[in-house]
Amino acid sequence: MNPEHPRDLYDKCRNYSDSRIAREQGIYPYFRCIDATEGNHVICEGTPKIMIGSNNYLGLAQDPRVIEAACEATRKYGSGCTGSRLLNGTIRLHEELEEALADFLQRESVLLFSTGFFANQGALSALTEDGDVILCDRENHASIIDGCQMAPAKMIPFRHNSAESLRGRLGRVPAEAGRLVILDGVFSMSGDIADLPPIHAAAREFSARTYVDEAHSLGVMGPGGRGVTHHFGLNDEVDIMMGTFSKSLGSMGGFIAGSSEMIEFLKHKARCFIFTASLAPAVAGGVLKALELMQSEPERIEQLWVNTRKMHTGFREIGFNIGSTQTPIVPILIGSEAKAFLFSQRLYEEGVFAIPAIYPAVRHGEAIVRTSFMATHSEQDLDFVLSTFERLARELGTFDDPVYTEGPRRRNVYDFTLHHENGSNGVREPAGAVARLGSELRTAIPG
Picture (spheres, rainbow, N blue to C red):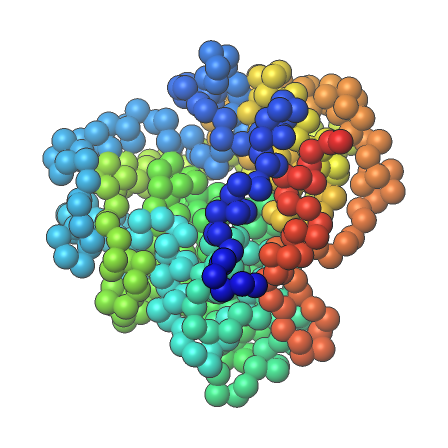
């Protein structure tokens, strides 16, 4: 390359056309604008849609008591804290929420972060150092993967939910290396529950700390909605618990829970905590009220599971492959990326709001429509969703796709790869590999 004519960083922007082509074909499914929310329904382009693409598992985001608590916090403290927690951004509500979460989760201490993404990034970067290793389930959320990549430690992925794979990886870690095993409590695409007992046992066998991301399990799993760690009775043994407020608690933000000494360290070392503005008063006030309601109204979680079981049974009876989900996250296998885009568009036109997930979020050629259900969905809502899915599947030939007629075609294409158990390390797939296969949008556009 001629040094006098360096590559323009904007070349890729000028050449990017995938989203434009999808819009021209009328099947672009992302960034749909919601004009209003009415309970389990949203208004888009003047038309109501049943929302089954939200992580608002307990329906608390629209609860008037939560909304009023957020408004009251705003009236008392203003619209924002305009500073970091370390400096001028700590208000009484932050400390009250940390204390309430610590009490609820039966942990010594809790630290709030502005987002769940920041919680993972901040904790992983601060707690590990050069020469350490992080053992990462290969289906972990992107915030965990990116947090691992930004941390000074080396990331080593292990086979999804496999204690055997983890044990093999740990057995090759240098004796002097600090080691941390990290996994989701509930995996956000598949709806799988972490097989935590044997994974934790393997970690302990090799003196590794254990870190569980409870983003999709808080308010869903365990006694009182305390998460997968409590569900398996391992709260006294799992070292670090992470959670978010953007799912069951109906807002935004995240936290790390654990020992007092670990939290005190993060307060002074986690850059994502120190160098960003603190949670807005409305968020802290609303989440505090949502946490209170989650505990005082256990029927919300009970109804969530009634709805979940109904949808698992209903989709399977229609003939859909919903994988191994055990939770309110129900991935509907479509197969062809083009069909997933089209299926999502037809759902939208029929009054159902759901979004497709394609490569690299799922395996190439095994696109899904990701659905998730709430405690507040009515029987009428759920019956309408099932009948609409069944009718569209027949209309669009979903069950004629090769993933249904021939079975899944495993191409081992992931956003990061797991090599054979021969000691070689898995790494995130280079950008060039995505380019060779076509971008995630390009593969989904017919023609």
